Length: 391
Image 1 (cartoon, rainbow, N blue to C red):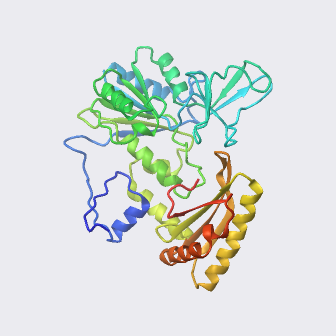
Image 2: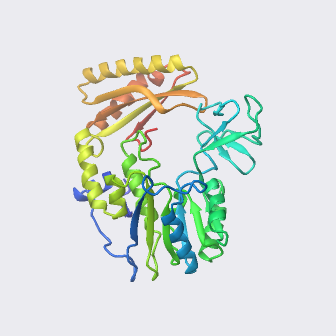
Image 3: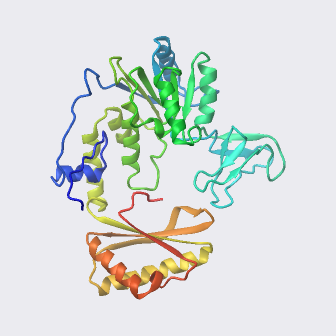
């Protein structure tokens, strides 16, 4: 629109961007070498089914523990990646079995050790000083699953001489705090950096010779056609943090799915193979870049109303498509994966089409004729063209 050149740079381009490059809509430039003499790190897959993590130290196999010890003995640095913050994704009372849910989202609350608080990572709800069960008053809890806070405690026990710092949205609520943590790690005040996806991009530490992916499978089964692309990008990016200087790098990826093509491609840092398989799947299913998606998301405080009006909207949309000679496939409406969020119920329907401009014009005209598309004020509708977030 501004008639200016734009450069898109990534070690793991989106499927749509790379398709545009191969189709010569974009000009493709490749960096085939790392800067100066740096070599790509050696990547090793560890099967969590074969080599179980130590019972008292979840996510730390003997292989990873040994490699971390060797790295620290060489006075080098380690980055450990787990894409799950907090202490535990769920907390359960062992006396009555109660598991606290967010009152606004009906999702399991994540337990944070600091402040003994329960948090909803979607709406921000916080319940502080949760030291007794809200149902029975019991004080005995089972902490299900692992987040970065729990791993931080485990690291301190496994590597008592290590200097550890954690980087996630809890430890770095303000951008300045994130900068301080990374600056201190660069100054070698710490030799282990543990974090979520905040540690995967844009950081360059020459003394980092080991990256450990504690659990590579998180996110692989999300109900999103881009789930594979997003996970592949995270693994590629975090692996690229190792061996960026003259010190050779190594990456340990722990996974329950070492046979997965996606995990194997990421371990070999083979973007082309991943892309060729992913683009075939997109073509077969007519997902972008072979179509455009329009996401209609309905929300309201009353579940029955959201369901009723989403189906009425679909029927009118189908009739309008037929009359307007528009082409597209309607999918849904169905409950959103995060169905009850921030106090409202949510449903969505999608249109797959190659006539997105016609649809936009049609929707704009419909909205002018009928305010809010004829929906009552208690029903909110968001229309997202080519959505990135499918949840």
